[in-house]
Amino acid sequence: MSEDYAPMWESLGMDLQAHDVLLGVLGQGYRDIYLAQKNRPEGMGYFDFVMSEVHGLRIKELLDEKKQNRKIIGSYCVFVPEEIALAGGATLVGLCSGADFAVEEVEKHLPRNTCSLIKSSFGFKLGRVCPYLESADMIVGENTCDGKKKAYETFAGMVDNLYVMDLPQVKSSQGRSLLKAEYERFKTAVEKLTGNKITVESLKEGIKVVNAKRAALHRLARLRKADPAPISGLDALLANQVFFYDNPARFTESVNKICDELEVRIKENQGVFPSKTPRILISGCPMAVPNWKLPWIIETTGAVIVGEESCVGERGTRNLTEDSGKNLDELMEAITDRYFKVDCAIFTPNQDRSDHIVEMAKAYGADGVIHYGLQFCQPYIMESIPVENKLEKIGIPCMRIETDYGMEDVGQLKTRVEAFIEQISD
Ligand code: BJ8
Image (cartoon, rainbow, N blue to C red; front, side):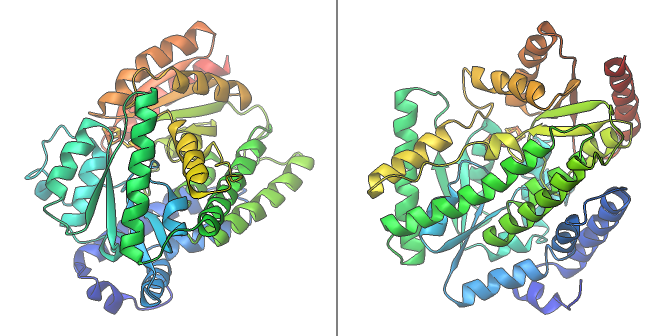
């Protein structure tokens, strides 16, 4: 990091010593996993910079925004509409965490058999090591899986600015009405937080900005259909992760720049790995920074990841929001329509998700699907069995993996991934 950010972190009430340890691990992991890759697009230099400054410059920018009276909203789920936050003059940042921290302390508040993602969010709060969390003026929790919704009850006692959004579990007309009502309630809460009234113009602008971000990722996704693959799955995952933190306009521009470069690569038949490298689609739980374990294992074992059916990936970004509404209600309806299509495994039944996995496997020319389930994540692990059955029935091999954020199972995972790659290479 180019500057001394210690005073800034201290002003946020962070534990500097613990935070140094975290940054040390993160930096080392990034060097070993990301910078060790070969043939990376030059445009990834931007994301290397973002990662090197992820707790530095970006936090400084957010604090500068706060000085200008802009509010920061933190969120743990792709169901929280960034369009509404932006329209109200707030900045939305993702808070999900992809590393274990303060585990002993966390297990005083949560049962051991809680998924790593939830535990990590608690660990980052209890350890006081997340400057995004500490900068947020409002933290939005959502009633999705049982683990999250019960965890927020405890979390409410650890922060003084938790806002809980209720979410439907069934894609019925009642479910849609609930989502719409909750988005209206969120709109009012954002207006109260920022003191700004959301207007047709500001909401249209918010939709435009978020659509542009998503469209850039759609373009990147389409380019990954090429063989040889022009970008590694690790790098594409990083772009999907940074989506949640970066300044939206700068993010869009940076992803589009990489896409320009990839188009040239494709024309010149240059790949990040040789042509005919086995192609994997990853499907399942979201992978938050710095959870790169499984993609790193896959791509150092002779395969390339060509898509992510995940909330940090296509499930989270796949649809744009219609922006032709003429009044606030029409625009809020369009936002509701867009988010109601997100096929998170908390929904029942959830046929759309397995259909989408098949569609993605075919579209990206995947030779096989690796289903990634975080240990103790009931919704995704439960769905992984019918997903596997469906894929196998149409001749797409699938392997189900259950893991956590620990590194103890790396050897065992590598052996399984190796066997799977061998199977799909035949
Ligand atoms: S829309 S996937 S971001 S809820 S891994 S905490 S499900 S036990 S994260 Fe998610 Fe929103 Fe759904 Fe997407 Fe629970 Fe499973 Fe843990 Fe999970």
